[in-house]
Length: 261
Image 1 (tube, rainbow, N blue to C red):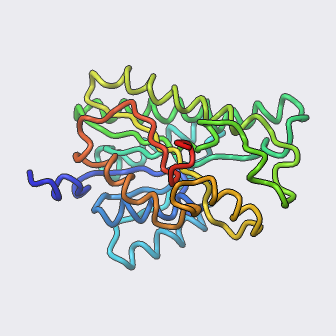
Image 2 (cartoon, rainbow, N blue to C red; image 1 turned 90 degrees about the vertical axis):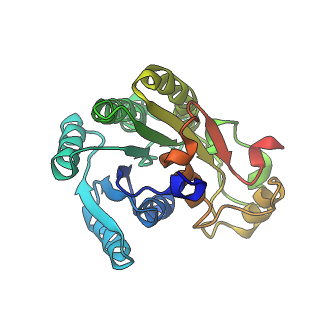
């Protein structure tokens, strides 16, 4: 196989949780443009269908399906439906996330429990179920979408001159930090079955934040800017495809050099 051909996802079936959000839209685009039969799934099927329809107009094979990560039966039903429709599952991108407990530290334990159920317990469940399907063909790629916030603590200097992060919560840092080692765990457990597990950790995403934050954060990167709407596409295709066939257990910052400073 020639090197550029190894990046193709033609013939592969991919599941992306989410698909209508800031990261999800470009990940769905990347999978579809590379040729994968792509399923995007979340609770907001109406919004997902808009994204899927736009990608179908561009020639992508994209289907929106319902998924409630808080409900184990919904997770099981989603995997079963994809296998019923396409007969296999080659790529899983764990992207969907809730931020229900990110408002502050001083919250009831029940609030944190709900966040952990969606962002941790559901991650374990869906990854296991997807892997059981991948084992049938002896190959697969699982990509976890983490965050630079899982690699380091919050930097107060980023928020000087803004009202942001006045009452930070530990939950997002805890969950995304845990994803780092869960990636290594899953890679170790699933490696003998030919299943690769890697994670990317995006940096700050430009979303019309206060000018002071944009200036402060950008100065802390090596490239001098926040992430944009295409910055994740290349690494997603690389990790999903055979181009990365000997890469597993890695945690890759995609952050313009932020965590390397």
